[in-house]
Every structure is written in C-alpha cells, then in structure tokens.
Length: 127
Image (cartoon, rainbow, N blue to C red; front, side):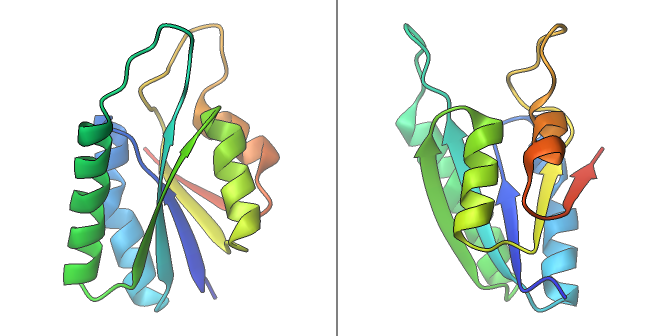
C-alpha cells in the first residue's frame, strides 16, 4: 500500500519522536523509506553541515538496522515546498512527519500544515 514513504527530518524533538512511527509503518508495509533533510537558506542564517549529515546518518542507520531499505536526500529551500517537490519526484505514497519543526513562528503556518495543503500524496502527522 505504501511502497515509498518520505520521512522529512530535522533536529527537533518532534521529528525524532516520529522516527518510531515511520519505522513501524515502513516495516508493516514493506516500504522503501526516503529520509529528507531540508536546510532553509536565509540571508545571514548559519547551519552546521556536519550536524545535518550526522542526523541523516543516524536516521538512515536506525532504519537500515531494522531491515528497512533507506535512501537519504538533502536539499536546500523552503521546507514545505521542498518536501512536496521531493514527494512528487520520488512518487511517494505517504509522507510521515512530526507536527512541529525548528522553524515555528506564531504568525506563520507550520511546515506540517503547509505540507498537508500542498502534498501530492497523503500525509501522516505524528504529534
């Protein structure tokens, strides 16, 4: 049913909490899991490429150790748009993501809310 599952991840607690759900779902449906990290480039913003690489490798390792075929993708851009673009590119059957990421502002819709609106496939949001 869910041949390809897209799992966007950042360094937030909510994203890390969603790992178990993504893993269970991928195992149950014998899915190929694509772990995605989106680095939002803003003028003057600093991100640590080593930290992003470490996060992606930790996620990939945990999925592979559990027997789930896993691919890692890293992109730059606005997270909600990149997530939806990648979902379309890989023909994802489902997106699994946490409810709150690192870029939450009171007057801006959350990334999860935007992904729900724009996604080319169903979205499972893990609280």
